[in-house]
Length: 195
Ligand SMILES: [Mn+2]
Image (cartoon, rainbow, N blue to C red):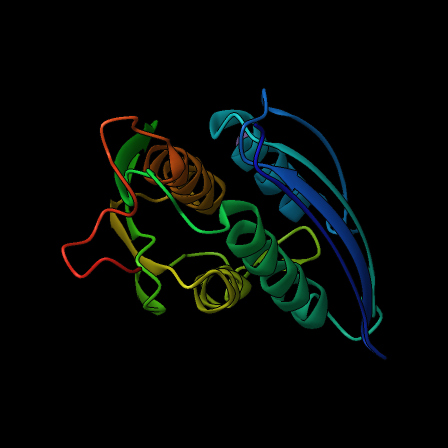
């Protein structure tokens, strides 16, 4: 059975519809009005082998902040809903992804304790109409709404586009691993019996 979720969220700042299939094939349609962010969410969908559609209309006349933060909230909620009871999932996932001169690492625990460690600094403040400081805010929204412990570290790099792309690909691969069903796992992956 495919693990799926659909979420709609509307505020005075943003109007977002998102559908996620954890057991997808890397296909989707992403429209947030922020070109570089769409590029990153498409990479996430492809490299995690998820299916994801997003339509987000946000107050981009203010800046990219609310739209990116709120897409993160909705994606986090969708991950949590799609995973459901988290029965037989591997729970932990990690990935290193190089992109030319840069190397990114992402480590995930889907154990239900939200936390973000974000260790990355970007030389450019903007890529198109996306504020690069919003990358950290996006992942904070995802982590806290998905109940995910998320550690992101960028070891080195110089091109901001490569650096952020490496992070999103590593995030996709780590999440794909953590969410993967392992038939050897009876119930949930915890000696406590609950995650
Ligand atoms: Mn690119």
